[in-house]
Image (cartoon, rainbow, N blue to C red; front, top):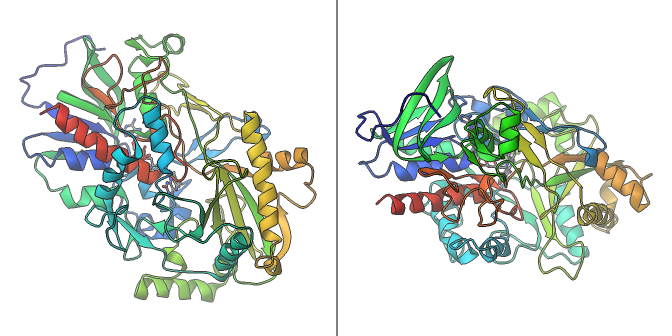
Length: 542
Ligand SMILES: Cc1cc2nc3c(=O)[nH]c(=O)nc-3n(C[C@H](O)[C@H](O)[C@H](O)COP(=O)(O)OP(=O)(O)OC[C@H]3O[C@@H](n4cnc5c(N)ncnc54)[C@H](O)[C@@H]3O)c2cc1C
């Protein structure tokens, strides 16, 4: 709330739309809404331009995550489910948001994920409803068909390198009855195979590259970087503008249409709460005026927890071997420069396996990310021995965490409490997935490669020991969602058209609106959300 009225519909400087956050979803919204030359659009992004070359070279995530020039560098609270460990939670702080620093893996989730959203009462979000938006976004290298599009802004390509150890893992999965699959983005996800990547000609296709660059010349689109949004201006129950800070200078932007909050699963609930929209008692505790009591803001936090098992191999065929050999490094650099191929074009993982820990399940409940390298944690240097990683995560965890304000200071990082492994099903799935991993490495195709289990280590044998091991080796796989959930129950923050409940002129459009996490990586779904929301916003403002 402001002391002086901020809003005048006739204000010549007013925008039709203000989009907060130029991330996976925000860039989509800014592109689609500014396609109408009659609408004035302002896009505010806390980070800077994506000029760092490592953003565009696929393996550059090794250089950009944990780097404050491109990453918010959030940390979680010490988590009891992880034996009291706190985790790094990277989030992109640059044009393109997390799509500029992510692992490039293109996975939409299972059709049942979206049918479940619809079943929760969210009209318009079944798989049949959202498939056209996945297709509209996509520029699929293999061409268009019933499940894929080829004319969209988001380039999707096949992996440019195959590796012996990855092929062996696919074969080992086959020996356990898991079929080989070359496309995880159709009606059935189950199987093992190489991921597709959001790359074009061997370079990253973030949403800044795919959606913003082609339209940044539009006269009706203003893009303001280094703009940290402090709060929304709400008058008489309507969001009429935004207060933000550019390098120490306080600014205000007035909106006559809609403000679209696309600041991600951490930023969006934080900005709502800073604006007095959230759980009343929490806001009062932080000394903030309560503009609208909305108890669900910041709740329902979900993430995929990856258990990173590491296997030492007899054969020097891993990226660890190449990364510590200066001649190999030069070869990798030259290969990338001259052919846009080789290890520098790799996504964060090469092979996916979607399978079930229990045969009675209808669809896969776990996903493997297979990496021909290993490290103590992603973003740190590779190990000095030959090894590969079989990371496994539960796809639909039951555990729920929360985002809360640390203080009313908009520059302070919020308090992130993931609450991992808090339910019996999540703990059971962790134990069973580690057992399945061991069966895989013992299979004829993979056994000849394996010298030793480095993590969690062969000494972990009983269920309790395996669970302890899971708590020790677990990391986020960077998929926080759900903190401004869509729905109609009292904990819902937005309705099925993504309008903030109880406040006019305000929507949330990003991964935070997911009522339940999708069964796979979350970039493609966040982009789909941006595509679908853009249509809804344009329709409602016609
Ligand atoms: C390291 C990493 C690896 C990942 N790997 C993959 C992968 O391989 N495949 C995959 O599918 N998904 C992956 N993900 C997840 C995926 O990228 C995210 O789910 C997706 O990008 C989320 O999109 P979003 O629009 O919700 O948020 P974001 O893309 O995070 O965008 C939010 C934007 O809002 C801005 N913002 C926040 N607060 C403010 C503020 N106060 N003022 C102004 N601007 C603000 C941020 O700077 C950011 O640009 C990864 C994520 C990370 C971080």
